[in-house]
Every structure is written in structure tokens, then in C-alpha cells.
Length: 162
Image 1: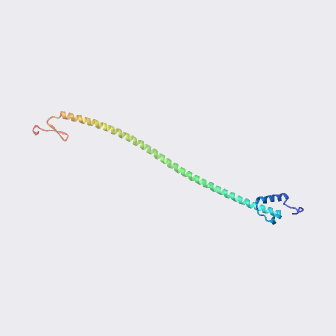
Image 2: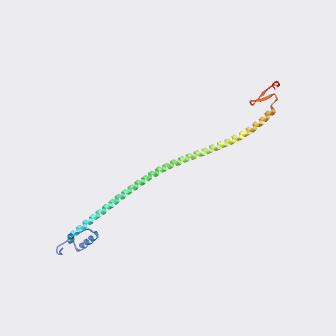
Image 3: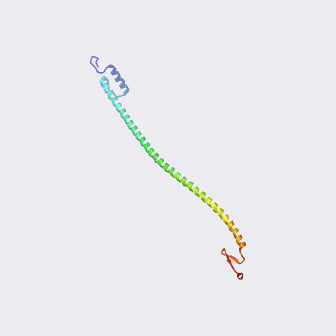
């Protein structure tokens, strides 16, 4: 490019273009290297394409991030629902355990009453047996000679029946 022609591309721009070309690893043909404006346009197009690819990659990453976030939110909501369900089950089990514990206490109280009653009945039975044997002795002593015991009752008989 002759220096007498007005050009929009300066030497600094050409240096930047060359530097950009070196960093971009974009394929620039030999004919484009001779014309700096074409080389600059190619580098810009390459960078635009690369930026678009990076933007698409970032957008996809963001979409995946959003999808991951949504997935995590769904998992969290499912876990919260599971947690709520298990809390309700736990509350139900606690209520049932409390009810069963009350019933157990009532049953123990009833058992204690029954045992007391059984001991009392046993003691009463012992007293009745001893009283019965004492009464048997008294009945035997008090029985007149003309009575005999028939079916646990005293029956009077005459002297002729002996």
C-alpha cells in the first residue's frame, strides 16, 4: 500500500492485525496477507465467529446451569415433600406410640389391681379355709348323737335306726 494514498488502516492497525492474526490462528491466505484491510476483515470475522461460539457455549452453559438449578430445585422440592411426608409419618407414629404408652400404663394399672385382688382373694380363701376347718371341729363337737351327716347336712335319726 503506497503511503501517498489516504488509508483508514494505519501502521498501528497493521501491527494489531498481525498480532491478532498470530493469536487467532485463523487461516489467512497469502493474497489476503498482502492487503491489510482484507486481513483485518478476516481477523475480525474470525474473532466474531469465535466470540459467537464462546457466547453460545456460555449460553449453553448457563442453560445447563439453569437446568441444573431447576433440577436441583426439583430435587430439593422432592426432598422437602419427602421430608414433609416423613415428618407426618413420624408425627403419626409418635401419636400412636403415645397412645400405646397410655394403654400400656392403663394395662399395668389394671394388672396391678388384678394382682392385688388375687392376693386379697387368696388371703380371704385361706381365712375361709381355716374358718371352715374350725367350724367343722365345732360342728363335730356340738353334734348330738342322734344326728348323722348326709350330703353335708345333719339328719336326725332315731335310736331304732342304728
